[in-house]
Length: 239
Length: 240
Ligand SMILES: Nc1ncnc2c1ncn2[C@@H]1O[C@H](COP(=O)(O)OP(=O)(O)OP(=O)(O)O)[C@@H](O)[C@H]1O
Ligand SMILES: [Mg+2]
Image: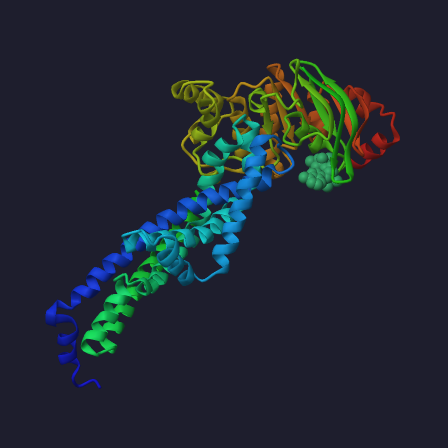
């Protein structure tokens, strides 16, 4: 099994420039992950703010603003239930074969699917980040005459974001690994790249091990970054 | 200046403020005392609507602030509040803590707000802390900053909710000192405190609260020297 390794290596990666399946796949994986994280954080932040302000203002405010907030909160809850209650692969397939059939770019479909999926998890991360900020911060802001939204934006959210940064990096890691299912819609990301080499050369071990190693290195990098971030944040709390 | 009419506050079915009517004149220093759970904080927090009264009116400067058409943010700019746990903004420098609201609410330009902040910091002997962060300060320093943060908005009234209760004993004096200075300058103040020495020295009027009612009130001499209500007597015998 191992004595023909050098020969297999040449066949898997060098011949016909097969290594390009890996590099271009990696690029696609990173692109989808990065864009999906941005979409996810935007969706997540909006939902988190709607849900917490709904909970905090409930029973204190009335009028059309509150009616709208009630409706928005209902929609957010439905979204969270559906997205977290179904597999991400099913969501991806539904978008690709049903809701976004007319979309030309598979990358756009993947980013949409993973962004929407990640948004549901990010929403809960940010929401618990907001709730972890002492209620006295909101009261102090309001007592100075700042409005609810301004206090949220200038005082609560910066602290909430800091509190949940490590969890957000964790979500990024999860997302990176989840994008490996994009092969189901024929999108050539990293995993599919390795798999294409396997089907061309009939050698499964080297290409798939290479793919695994690349994921591992990226994940380890982010884990290291998260550790550093957490230490830095702990120090800045003491300052 | 503040007119409270038949104020009632319930949390669920629990009656916390039981039909309170009270009048606070400009320049008065009203000190509220009473046992734990008697509704002192709730009363104070109703004055700037951090708690929404269940019923009753609060008139501030001729404006009914419980009316839902009142711009409560504009009203709160006139009322400073100091909390037991300081509630400084930990992610902002001391300078930014002081200038955030005045600048955001267009009360002053950034340069004016800075100048005013430096003046206030000098007043509480913390000029050298302008660029520090709240986490670097002692409790007494934090509370002095919290007081001047409220003053930076140039309020007409200052509300204090047990401003020294979370402090180590050796730091109580420095905070009370700032409050006494404020009182001398003529600020209208409403103070919930367990510092009876401060109440005797500074208060123009002492309110004794129990079970959501103002049971007795009068000058410090009357309340501490010759209390009439048996509840007041009992309370004072415990704390003095
Ligand atoms: N947000 C709230 N929800 C429910 N109950 C509350 C709330 N805030 C206060 N209470 C209740 O209202 C009553 C009065 O509370 P309040 O904080 O006004 O008392 P206090 O006189 O300030 O007491 P202390 O001296 O301990 O600060 C207490 O029984 C308290 O449990
Ligand atoms: Mg209290």
